[in-house]
Image (cartoon, rainbow over all chains, first blue to last red; front, side, top):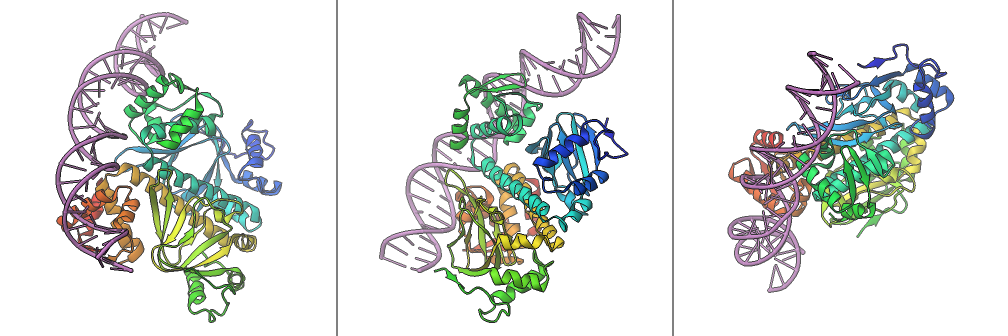
Length: 243
Length: 243
DNA sequence: GGATAATTGACATATATCAACTATTGGCTT
DNA sequence: AAGCCAATAGTTGATATATGTCAATTATCC
């Protein structure tokens, strides 16, 4: 069940465990790095920390939102629900990630959904409070714009990859993404079903399983249940680039 | 040949024809609307107005850029060049459009190319000048962020459309896009080859031609060379939505 | 009038669909 | 805590189909 700290987070970060402490720590290295201590305190005063369990929806496509999400802990899938019922998983959000879609501007709808694939601790920050800082802090607006530009470039690349590459190239992309962007390890246990991995790779689960099997036969990877080990990254990179 | 107003534009907008006058007029309704006259003058002083002829490259993928582009007149294709040599045309840029990729931040590379499909007049604005306004003008930063969010949502939708829809749905999308977003008319002459229309629709030119022919047989559209007339928009909308 | 673009047809293939089967998981009972 | 059952997830094979490729022909444009 969803747990909300109704009395919000405390600046000292002591009242509610590590939630806010880690939140501030995150600020140092990510989108919030340009903020002064005073500005951080202002945002913390207003934000809500929420805990989601596996499977719970954090943001639902086509609903209005007035806040942005900052993930403190755990993994979430960022996906689009298409008209034919098939989902497209665009990326996996992890600690430190900042998710702002329509939520940054009042009255806008979300064009995507986000749901927890592990237990997720995240902060919901009211967008009006966020944008009110822009005027005082030039660097913060630039940092946010930079973040949006990065997302834009990511989506451009994904658009090309998903429309121009054959299936093996897309599976290789997904595996390399999980290794390099999410788990930072050659072996990792993925909290995603084969169906979801297929939705990340723009194919059916059957096709994904088949290609995973081929990669295993070729000794590029090792699989045991949800654990995947990358054995030959350079071959995967080559497959990613050439197909 | 590319024509550069080396002495830049004049605030009065009189020295170089309608270029800058229309530029300022555009400011009123788009991304620059929050700017004061003083801020507009500041940007105009620093910008360069350039004219491109059909086929010329305005921005080239993988090159560094330190300026953003504002289209004053004409149409340009915004596309990504993929590794296998096939292009993906993401959108058509028209008067009033603001194009900022890596160019907004120093040292970043463009992840796309832009080239003129008609004669294009555009302004190149140095990104450092643009970002220097953020601190003074809160609304401007928000407007820019809003623009980026819009682009993001556009790309999310395109990603789903191109990966989930069958070819007829994608051709319908392209035709409706041209009608509603670019030409605002039921009949229009497209300055794009069939190859390029196919690159907008994520398919080969042969497939595009075949489906265009089917639509013509079904009396949904009329075609004569590069002129396309939309006869039955509701049928196209239905095809776009259902496949 | 030659080069380029558009069209049409025959064929090849990447990928989805359908169906059957096996493995795994979570909850309930004892 | 052990074990069993039902539901869900994973796997594999056979087949269907959407779409690309190749080739030939016709139209269009500078």
